[in-house]
Amino acid sequence: MTGANRFVDSALCATLNRYGVFVRSAMRTLNSQLDSAEAFAICDLSSDADWRGDLRSGEQVVCSAARVNLMNGAEPERRAVFRAVNVDGTSRLVRQAVAAGVKRFVSISSVKVNGESTLLGCAFIETDVCNP
Image 1: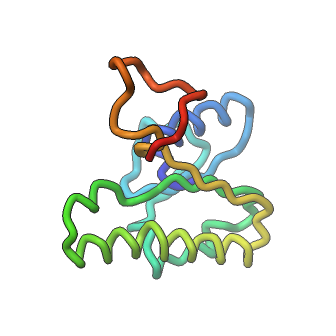
Image 2: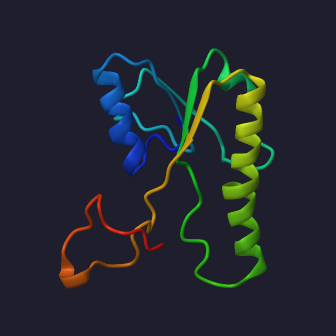
């Protein structure tokens, strides 16, 4: 699981652990409060990251790690970092997962899937139309 110390994956990791599912968690900064069977640090989800050793004996990968808040300007440097992590890095992870025999790859994100705000200030719910 990548991004395991963030919003969505930390809850998923805790739930899987309660059901006895072994989880290896990858993150940029180790979090001692993470409810995970095994955690390891990886510098960044980048186009040159080597995941081969970390994918050993894995059956599934859940990827929610991403660089966010980099698109607040049109500077080419920001776009290059965003692409290197979110496109190239994820693509590399997918290719290495396939090569390692991973059976399932799930990519998830919760960033602005429903938009910037709700109508009338109500919370988003699962039946809301996506409006990223």
